[in-house]
Amino acid sequence: MPLPGNVFSSVLVLALVGVIVAAETKFRLLAENLHRDQKVVGGKSPEFPAWFAFGAATAAYQVEGGWNEDGRGASVWDTLTHDHPELVVDQSTGDVAADSYHRFQDDVEALKQVGFNFYRFSISWGRILPEGDLSSLNQAGINYYNKLIDALIVAGIEPVVTMIHYDVPQYLQNLGGLASPLFVQYFEIYADTLFRNFGNRVKVWITHNEPYNFCVDGYGYGRNGPLVYAPGVGEYLCVHYTLLSHATAYHLYNQRYRAQQKGSVGITLSGRYFFQADNQTGSEAVDRALQYHIGWMAHPLFSEAGGYPPLMEKEIAEHSLQEGRTMSRLPAMTAATKAFVRGSADFLGYNYYSSRLVQLDPHPYNLSTTPSIEKDSKLLLSVDPSWKRAKSSWLYVVPEGLRGVLNWFRTEYGNPPVVITENGYSDDGQLDDHGRVDYYKSHLTQLLAAIREDGCHVVGFTAWSIVDNFEWLQGYSEKFGLYHVNFSSPTRERTPKLSSKLFRELIQTRIVPTPSLPVR
Image 1 (cartoon, helix red, strand yellow):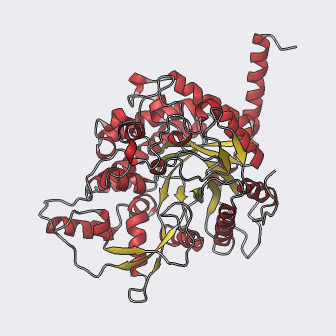
Image 2 (cartoon, helix red, strand yellow; image 1 turned 180 degrees about the vertical axis):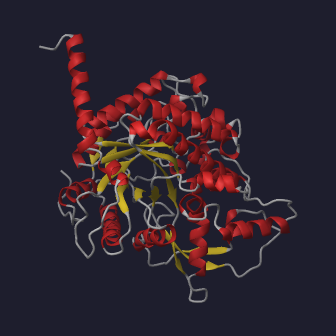
Image 3 (cartoon, one colour; image 1 turned 90 degrees about the vertical axis):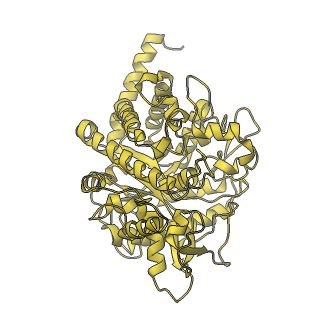
């Protein structure tokens, strides 16, 4: 017979407390990796180290749905998909998506079936603080994420939380979004709310996701939410306030929460690796491309000197003067700001998908066209025609690029702790996803070589994504999930793909497997 309500509640609370205590010692693999200096065993061992953590990821707007339920406020992506449906290839929205707002337990079950150590998910700022600050605190949003976090812990899965993954509250965008210094103040309030409510269980925090992509496409070229067209200025302002807001959240955690919660705070960057397209420029073009695409954010955080890459500071200032401006389009960092930002990350999260060939643009800087980071960098990018392409037009399969960029982090920034926070392959959504399996096998092999042979300090790997989801401007036309989602069904059933079997075997054996059996 069922337990009486009060007895059942007491038993549930005691059970959850017990699981949380156990989680501190058993299920905090990634958090523990970030707190100790891992000693990598050298040589060509075929096994990932026993301490290495594997996880999978999603993002709030891409999977949650429930876009207008329980007090959630609109984000810039709600605005984009509702007001400009023509921008999404299938004119779809994230209004329901994978319906994880109601079916998060299905996601937890999928993670558990594979055996993942952690789940990287993002919190919808608008679900917690619809108008950005505590005046609009939404307890229903707090309750939802409490349920998700507790369900993960009960399942033995470590929660890894991204604070914002593209979905800036529309209310804050009305105030200027990430192009405004006001954003830093609002982000501090938001981060404090998350630390205070979830920090007793969440020990790995990621402040921002892919500032290069978000800022260049959202505030530079205006191709993605929030559709701000201000190339050559907007993307630089956006990254600047991304870095300042990140550092503010990091120092807040140090001052108020770290001693008791004992967690880690990092940031997730993105950017392709580059190989020289010709033999004329040597490594100069590769170095320049890495500085403009990754160093732009990584140099202020992880270099000894701090501040933006000197190459960017010098050249963007020169271009700005040539354009008749009185100051650089790249915001200046004072000595105090450099010191505030430098070192304000416990780890470097990195999303790797693809690479490009690069060469120097031989033409002089063109004053007759609109400025942009692309123009400032003076680079020409291309692809090798032999590279296989996924469903996404931008995703070419170049696994050696992952090893290349990890070694660049090692030599450029003193080998900081790195978590691969996304890696994945797009297709049409088939269950026998052999292309995805081959992609992961080749990338995991390169990752293992970077760890074992090169000594790169990588402590975790995250597959994108655990389930099929809304892929931004591509809508539901491209799929990245290890689990198929039936988007035509109101119950959004999840079905495992062949790639989920690959990860199940990998986690059990620590060896990159060669799956040959069909999905059951």
